[in-house]
Image (tube, rainbow, N blue to C red):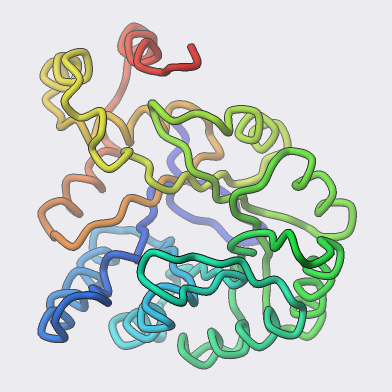
Length: 277
């Protein structure tokens, strides 16, 4: 199994970390020390791709990453703009060009970098012409403030349209063993060599109680979460799962999923869990 991936001109390990939960933006400030310890342990374990967004904790997640890891030392920090969070349960796309550019400027400041290695459009705003949103991203690249661009929650047609004018190196869509609505997007990314970053890669444990999953995990001496991540890594060479956690123990277990080898038989049995297969 291929363990590394070229993301544009950058080279990353195929098992990353989703930082959204690490900041504990709705938990006491006392947890900040633990969050910093968690992030530093992530890097110690060899993870060199970390995903965040300007809307995670209203910028607090980016601040936390800078406090814990700056100057990053070869770790690729990917962030996203284009989505606001007026309340804990309300996520609203905002793709006005002036907003996207301002948001990127603030991310640069919070992350303490001169250029964002990977900036992804968090959501396409249906109230703003798509071409205008893509144009704002293109300007950020032209200005030297962004190195590479990606998209999140897009269809194949939206991805194709963006690629007519931009070099898109990544797509971040919801995808896991039992949630495969974006199978066609993954197949397109695989064919084109575009990194596919599945968020919620272990479905929040929703299928962890599956008897089949438990049986195979027991055979391999792995946890259900590790098996779910291993399946993703075997599914396509362009997949970069980004499991998130607040627990160092779970972090270490997740990273160890890269060492789980699936036989053809194990992989075929896991396919039976998919509602689309």
